[in-house]
Length: 322
Image (tube, rainbow, N blue to C red; front, side):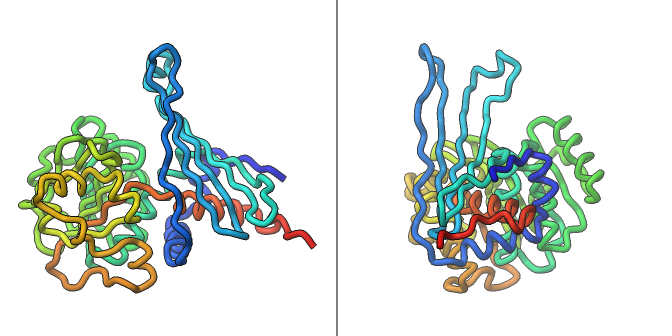
């Protein structure tokens, strides 16, 4: 039976502790590499529009694909520019199992991946979180990080102070001790964890301002032209990534220092598979500065979608043919 899950269903069902553990198990598997996201131009009469596809599978268990459309001209129609839908299929029979709101799924799995990395890379006693950005993903980062660290204070910075205040108010209603900040440079040295979720093309985080022991989480900047940190931040940190193919194809925070000759890819300390499997060590001491750069991986969507459907309908799994 094909089921449909709204954004509200996704947010209600995917608690962060359970979702983080589902991602941990997904990355721990030594599975086959998944394709990078593919983009296609689908605009009409010269108007820009793109279709993105992100497939993933675990043979014999589950198959899924996320479809994303980006139609910038939708603002003129009173519509959002980005739409997304996830399709989950049974890995034994290929039969459709569910359609899922793609934006909600993406927001939650992205925040959960950051928290998963933080569980290896931030100090266990991290108590102050700085969120840089006020968009859709940013509003989920506090809850995810609070699921793995004893966060006592959340600072929120955004280019638009009103939006930063609004997000801080939202986080307060969710039970966090959150305050807006207007000076990013002053906030950076106060944070144990800095989590960025923006589409910036200019560095926001200055490496010189990061105090020893900080963990820097870079969630936004998912194209080579974007970046959230300067070269000094990359150079000061032990750098970890979600996946090697994705990061080395899309992460402007890494690709731009590489192109400038100030950093090299062989300084990457590990990815989420290596961290979760124990093949690579995470944080080594209290004073080192760590960095996690994610661009998003299709296996995260598949793990989140499978958890959602299996937990909501434990008896709905298609049985393999006799």
